[in-house]
Length: 467
Image (cartoon, helix red, strand yellow):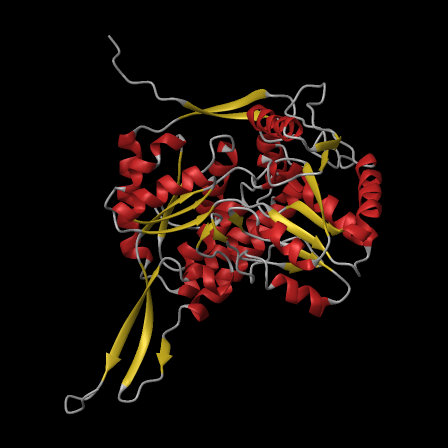
């Protein structure tokens, strides 16, 4: 009799039509343990490899990604539904980040001399070991890149638990690393379910954990890491404000806000989820937003004419509609949309909501879909109060012709990032991360590479000197 335990499968489901494309067997605990053992063994040699040699491999990763951007883009669109143009852009952005750390890691992690009264002192930056990376589906390549480019270039090794609905994107990235010449064990994908992640944190060979995901997932992983006295970094979503000042170009502000909110079908942690405009401009802004919505085309994400893609899964679509319905029940005005589209796939109508008050759940929570929430304010203090009235603090935007005034307002917003006249953006050289319940730690930029290294102090002095 066959007593072998059958483990659950990891599936690719095309959200455009909800068809199952491919299935992968989930790994057993024994398989995962062996992968972590191998990553720990590989760390002992990888940490001794020069930055120059590591950089050659990661430049090759970037080159392969650019050469195969169409293929990679189509795979991301197939698995999680985003527009093909957005998928290809994501591949190009990821390649830029790999190039950035391949070129800069040695400079960032060079010994840092300290100014001391006697003798010499400096900081030496050492990698710490195997990093467990837990990443979401909304940017399947970029999320991998944000953690792997910095931390593996620093000399760590990594095991990745990607979202269960993007298994092919997860696998192809491991394949690209190998094609570029990365030795076995340095970076390995784990096909496991979310419920199996927390126990991995207690594995003594896991040195740190980085997670992008929901607040509950982040809280459980952070607690598990804390119990083991292990470093963690978290990015847990956002409900970004988009404050429009009195002098703003309304046409440009509407265009930017609508495009930003519909980006990735609204499934972006840093999209402008709450648009806050002065009362004197409110009617004009509302009418022009309606006009912009009328031009949106929902449809096949592989079609270049489509503006709004399906959501990532059927459940995601159901959850967004439920949030909109609850806002309506609590008294909000659903001006446009708010329903499922009568067709196959995880589609939700682009939705415009107004008259949201602090008595409604939508005033505080994040809606992860194509839902544009419009607020009005009488003065800047009220605008800032609305902007900060959420548990999240990831990104934000201030839109104005007077950039000095915009910066003054930006300083009052409780987030990790604020962009002037632009939705919260992404670039290799810019730190990414938040505050409050949006998490802690930073990715990208010089800051990102220091999260999982030991800044070791080395102090020299002569025996006859006191200090």
